[in-house]
Image 1 (tube, one colour):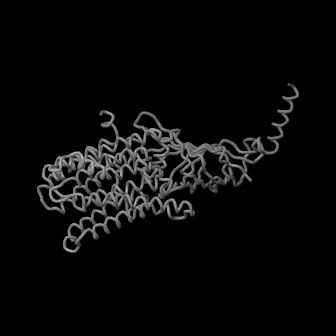
Image 2 (cartoon, chains in turn brown, green):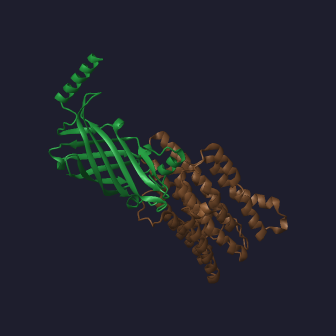
Image 3 (tube, chains in turn cyan, orange):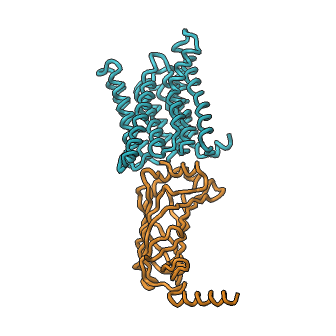
Length: 289
Length: 194
């Protein structure tokens, strides 16, 4: 514990814990869904700022600087969707189009340097990697955006645990900084999940695209730019929300569907995927610790 | 044994005669990568200074002891050649948070002004480009010697240099102040003509 307090991660985690709780309580007081949706993206942007100690200039140079603007733009896109979509969009087609577009644009923008001046085999490898990331990112965002029905908080809990599951993959993937960002994000989102468990609120697309899109940008950066990601561990990570939802459905009696217990069970089972991920990472890589 | 001593003395005199070890003349040199070492040091949590090095570089310099201000130097370093003797840390340092070798595969140093402080020392002010950001850096240089290099009979010149810069000025702010902002450079180099 003392080593964590002395580490560069402690200011990130501490500030995100406090800000996450304060913002969530404030959003609860304001009671405006669009304001409440901003808590998760603000936790991401704070975690980013505390990790990199900068607001990058625009246009951003380098993938880590792009992450900030990805989170900013996806937050605005989500906010627009949450404000306008109920009037225009019917069915799930519009939502699917938004998450596919977001996932595609994030991967292409982050991975752009891989396409420039690349010879054919490298270009094919880069395209294949981008295709995998777009598919994985779409599944992740789609699952988070559609999981909650009225009164459910599964999406909030899932969004909160996902960065924590990804943190060791980032650490082994040549990005201890991203691991720190993920731990900060978990802290902020855990506070949000706690408040939402007490006063249930459906996770809107502002939260999913803002924080989820930012997390996707981190994943894409490690995969496409740092290029040290473990794809097996990444596959397990992408399966985590599905494992959580299916696991909770199997473990809990049917009458508890939609309850806080189901949300917690979903989060715990999803978070448990970190165990096989750690086994995979320690077996396949030299420990960075 | 006496024969060997005589032969060695003769070779030494011959070498001095054609351009001894301290003889320097105006020439354009190509950096010899097998005798060039670029090290950097950065403070690690206040406990020690971590040392890293780059093993792949190219470059050239012009050097005339009689006209120091007209010197030239340009060095290009392949950032992916970074090594700190610990694989996982190298992966981290080559990644997007630090040297970002995928997007910025090269860092360059181009000298812009040169001055002599005494017979064997001087300063080079130049532009260091790292992570797409160019900032001036001052190197304090010691001229070691110039002349014919024994083994390959090439005209050579050798220098040692040290310098410091703040990595935050190049946008590399990761883990400051836990990992130091000040980066010390230690350079040992030889250049050859032809």
